[in-house]
Length: 196
Image (cartoon, rainbow, N blue to C red; front, side, top):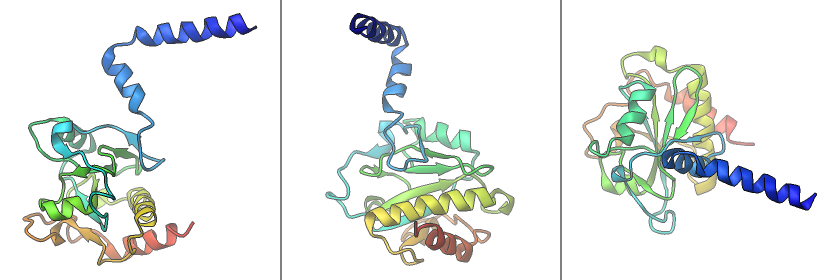
């Protein structure tokens, strides 16, 4: 029995070694998420700053963004080292599916303001600021669960003073999440869903 288990283990290890390096690297990092419902799809290491938050910088805000791109195009942008942009999370419109692209301990380049980048978690949402049909129930609910989890883990108050739109970051020229983002609904969901 022991010999069989050893041989089976060796066969699994040998099969894994036959996989291309890129597949092995992806498989090795699939569990590297800070939020259990997220899926690890890493941004290019050229698009964020490695850090040790919250010891290096306190995490005090969640910043809400809208991509102005499709979900898949946003992932491609985050993975392109020439773009110099990333966010910690990306939420898909249709079903609320969540990718994590930067670990929370690291500083994503999302706010356009270094001070806010260091002290926040950035969440991008698939869609366009002038197309409210992208802001689906699933997106709001899954994003609110994510934001509530972040707030709970970093003791961030679940209010509009700490959950900001990109447009509210000092020095930004962005308008997202825009006039169609339902802030009252969103903050209500963050508080309602974040109690469990």
